[in-house]
Amino acid sequence: MAPALLVVRDTTEALQQLARAVRRKWGRQLIAITGSTGKSTTKELTAAILARRFSVWKSLGNLNNHYGLPLTLLALEPSHAVAVTELAMSAPGEIELLTRIAEPQVGVVTNVAPVHLQFFDSIDSIARAKRELIANLPQGATAVLNHDDPRVRQFTDGFGGRVVTFGFEAGADFRALDVYPDPSGGSRFRVRGPSFDDDFHLPLAGRHNVQNALAALATASVFHVPPADVQLAFAAFQGLPQRSEILTLSPGITLINDCYNSNPVAMERMLETLAAWPGAGRRIVVAGEMLELGPSSPEWHRSIGRKCAESGVDWLLAVQGDAQFFLEGAAEAGLAAGRGCFFSTPEEAAEFCRRLLRPGDVVLLKGSRAVHLEKAVELLQSWEGRLPAGPDAELGI
Image (cartoon, rainbow, N blue to C red; front, side):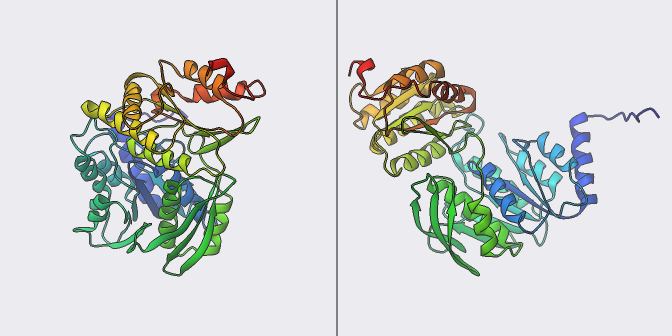
């Protein structure tokens, strides 16, 4: 039998309408997660927790836009009890469209940060775009919100459904206490909340990942998942590639591969993670350009450069374009002369870093996706066993 051929006015719109129809026919609980940073990790953690009790379908990879979300929904099966989806945007109105397609009963917002400023005139404009998820939830839905983010906290205004909050600050429904880094590169923390007063171990470094875990835990609470299942899900969690990925090179060199993407807030969080790294010798940052920051890009880069110096970074290797302004900010904040270098390509940065490394060093690599800092990671891994094991003789310092 020949396949049926349907003529449509707009193929993208038809894809979205078909996905909405499939979602409605499926008819189960759906979670939608958005935010400037952390949404993919939060999605993965949420799915891992819920999978302890339910058959879960989740957005794969970065299928989170007006094409990707429909493809995610079209893969729903009757056997799936819960779906966990991710919503991304680069312009106003996109989150509203995705919410109307997915029709979630639970909406999660991780945070609002200065990303995509090339397309928005302010962070408040970004917040309004993210709020479209909460504003378009159906009656009786639940909003899971970051209590520590003042803009996200305001998303409760005019929302008539249930609100569950998470964060580090007093007043959050699910609050993390006693957070400290684990020597293995993970995090340990305690959570207090409704039916929760328990200790957790997460094999991901940094307070930002603890916050992602809190968002997932708060979301799972809507489905009445007990603390014991959350503990097991966290302990067994395997992070996404190039997101807080810990790699070990001999002899005794640690790479923090966070090359998937970058923005000012995410960069600050990773610098805090590097500063708190237990037992680090020297702290080295390979920082790629942060893209889509619009006219304010140079100052955002200078600000992160200052943060590098204030965080005690020993070396700053800046890669591509506006990353040169990292070095200006770092010098202003006191980075030692000669300890900041600019490179046009990740390969050049990797070669310099190779000659720089010695045992005990911890290296953070982070940049916007288009910078392709993963090439530097791959080169450093390929040179394992042939890295310098002493002072920086090859550099002449």
